Amino acid sequence: MLVLATLGAPERRRLSARRRGASPPEAPPTPVSTARATVIDVGEPLAPGEPAQAWLRRAGEAELTEAVAILNRALRAHRLAAGDAYARPVSRAQAIAARVGVGAGEQVADGHWSAARELIASPPRRRRVRALAPEARLAAILGGRARPLVCEELALRARLDLDQGHDREAALQLLIALDAAVAELAGDPRAPALAGRLQELRDRRARVATVAHAAMARRLSAPELETVASALARIEAALRARAAAGA
Image 1 (tube, rainbow, N blue to C red):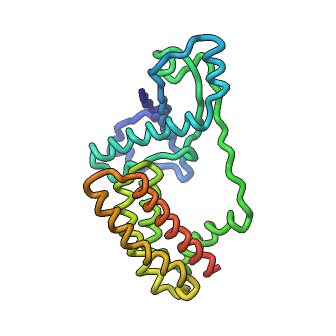
Image 2 (image 1 turned 90 degrees about the vertical axis):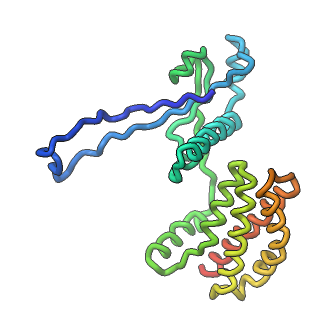
Image 3 (image 1 turned 135 degrees about the horizontal axis):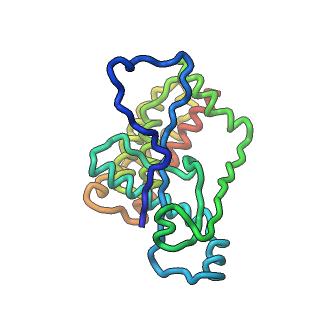
């Protein structure tokens, strides 16, 4: 069961015509609302006492990953039902707080627990050079010194679909990303340094096209899904190599 709630929503007031446009030079920040999503396991209930506490001690990121997937399925359903192109999935990193807990049904539906603990995300450790690379490229793109490629955006969309379990969408998106990558990288000034990777992408095109055609009619098999995952990984590797060649 998924329960959604809005917290801290500011009071909406109708402004008169006389007050419109009147704002102090240094207005305070406008309060914003936050959303709380509670995923409740309505399967076999936990016995109170030690069984519930034992589960709470074991529960962690795996349970949170399952909960985020449930929330994203609901967001996807809303996106399709409402025709809202701007409704997007959420990730673990976007959570202001994440908790696991136990409690009675009505209690947890209201965001309360008999016992709970907060899950603190551990940021991945990265080498400083790698950590600075996205910031340096962002500055170059915004400053007009670097040209973003269409295939970069298409590959990101395919990655999102694949990670969210939308295999058919990922396969169709991948075919477009692959064609765009071959065309754009072949005309890139760094193409000589990417010759081997370009040929690898060309060699995968026929198989990717076959899988994409199958995706228009049905879910993908495990081998077909592996074709999508591996081809997407090679596009991503080629784009990283392009960025490194221009460093």
